[in-house]
Image (cartoon, rainbow, N blue to C red; front, side, top):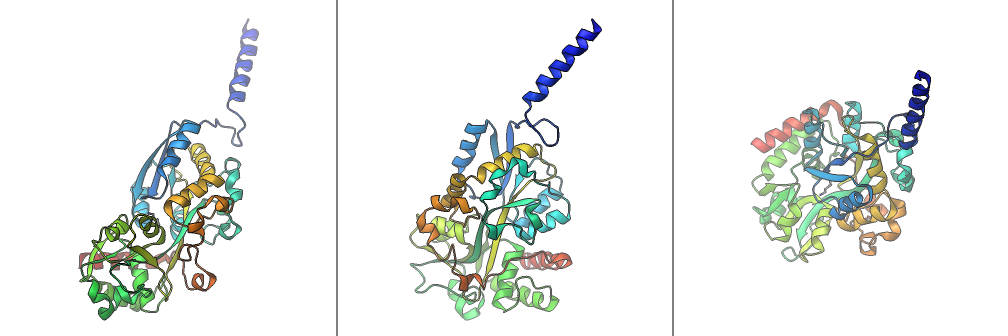
Length: 355
Ligand code: N2P
């Protein structure tokens, strides 16, 4: 009797294990009921979340952040609810160093093959061990083409006392330490990644002087302020301005001739995610050719997904301020992890904001 019982138990076990499907870690691979995404604002077509839920039965819940530094602070403060986060290049490097990210299991992400070679194996995450690119874009100047006679194609329009004064009270800047200090450094002819105390001090003085003309520091609705005529010029990200331009004819965007920032934002999974498997299934879904194109057709940012190209709106592919020509690309700089100098950027930023 006892023997029969144990044979039956073994059979039950075999059936249960087989139902769980193949798994490299030997554990159960079941989808969670919910997936918590921590994303930049207006960075995905909401229909994508709904379609994922319809196909996989997983409800996606999104929360948004306004800067890489806010995202990091939230994770460091012990936020554990997120399955997917979207840090930029330099922040991926910082998070790897701080051991905040889970290593990706590529068995669950076959669509990673759709990524363009140009975006594979990036310096901030060699071998894409912890991240895969989501979107890329540039940081430059958005403007009201009905108010300005010519394109403000120099950082001088935001920083030079004579050139910027006409826009006093009608100017917005990103609420972002690395981007905003970076723009000032670029105007001064320095690297966006300067670690020189004197150069950073000069940038600080410039930003304090500029404060008199700035009506708001905003990273989440800057394009709407321009569309509504509340500002006529602003520092911001390419895609958000172009997405607004689809409806507001006065909105346009230019990359300053001195050059600006180029960045990639990336999909990553915090170590504290409640279901790494569900997060990987979601990343694989986002990397499908049609879904990748749907993201870009909504955000107006460049897609690192090569297989998506044929589904992307030609108007986006042909826009030189979204997919810049090589001579412009050459002048763009990635923000890098500046190590210990990060504390100098943070201090300067607080001093500017509280001045
Ligand atoms: C989305 C802005 C994301 C770009 N609204 C910042 N890297």
